[in-house]
Length: 474
Image (tube, rainbow, N blue to C red; front, side):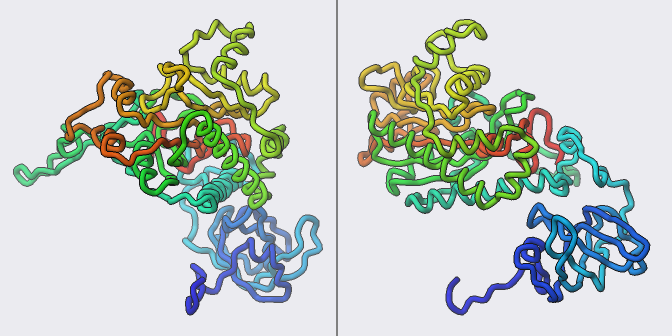
């Protein structure tokens, strides 16, 4: 902290529950704010479990029953002042003997949808996205998600990467799959004093989409800063109701200059493995209480995660993957050049020791136009997908095609634009104006990594406000 700068709490005079439980300030007077997650009333005393979202464990508050506020109920917001005492109750070391409990916000006027001491199924909780943070499991996941985001950024900072804010609105469909959301403007034109919404046309008469990836823009920044990354939302207009797809999700993407050929691909693979191992290990350590609470509910996840952190990731080529799949009686024959489905991905991770698996050297025809080809085989992309048990693809990347003539031949229309007004003309400039270098990069799906780490079966339960097909309620 810079000299002369003082630290101020966001709520002056209050103490977080996690601080009380960690520091155990016995015989000291403190004030905590939070929500009541449990009430046990006895003749002389009432016991409250108070949670402020700072940790999984609740702080027990003891107050004389005669002083209990009339409006106090399950999940009331309260402000409690009292003295911290050592506790003789099993499972807790301190408790707060309250001399004042104030209910904040008044009485509840509608029935609360989550009941005390009941476990509600995820699909029921998902009906109340605005209230999910009030449930123990979801609040726990959100803390882990926050720690994961910070761990990812700390890794890139230590490795000398520069953070780049890539655009949300873009003129390009980076992946070329056509699963994009179109951006349109809406003007309000006055007509006889009535506001008439106008939604026809493009974004100010220019084609624009919500980004599916910041990778092309990161390439531009890497050709000047060498090592760059972003942490941004991405959008896919995929008409899927499956447990593994979202219309809006988050990716950490990185791009590194001066990566070329087989050596560059090995560097890229090492970068992905290093990032994931470091991040998972750090989150398991810093978020131990929340992580282990999820592991209790998801049998086998702890062993799987710890083995993934400790052991090298398996590496196979696309051709080797097809050999494994086509020897199995579970699938019809996978033809060379076909992409792999989720069932193929999960089979490969299970067959290869229930471990994380890198699949490299993909057929060019099932990968985007910007991926670099092998000098030995011009129909093979120097690309890699990372598959993880129970989840499938978590990360993907490649070396980028830095040769202008190859890039011109690779575009889906067989000719990239030569007109500077075309939305991909700037991408050609990276090659044609000189100074452009070979580079490589990758993207990691944050929600899928979180699924793997915590053993969460549905990706919709890894993000605060999930968006999927025909679902955007708030």
